[in-house]
Image (cartoon, rainbow, N blue to C red; front, top):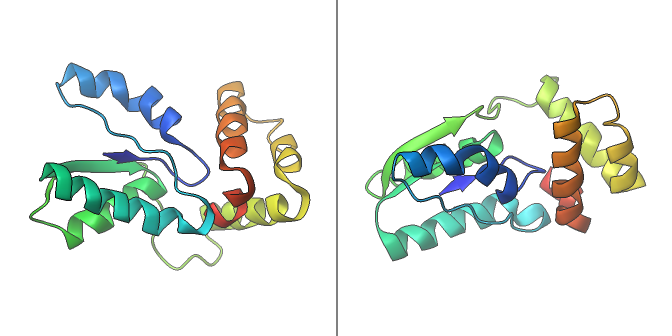
Length: 148
């Protein structure tokens, strides 16, 4: 099971990992993001439920999803068959770390002015990134700010 980062979704995970994993004979499970502030606990509960159902899992993710997968793997060594971590999230003191500041500022902008205002700030970003954020952020809806 692979998890996306905050503000992203399973569509991006599938676009990045489905073909390479299929070539290795590994099926991809990529759940949609739980809503808002329930993001981390929701993903961890999904990992627990899948391990209960299927036994040992290969887990991983991108950014925050990689961090959560690693956390779950450490807590569940007998249920984790491997870990795939792409661009793992910063897990130190948030403080002035660039990713932390960007997430806090984006969450504040979304909460204060809405998704459209936040998306307008991506105008200078590469087209693929703007398209991904537009699709994923709109899917998160009212829970986006809390999920960031």
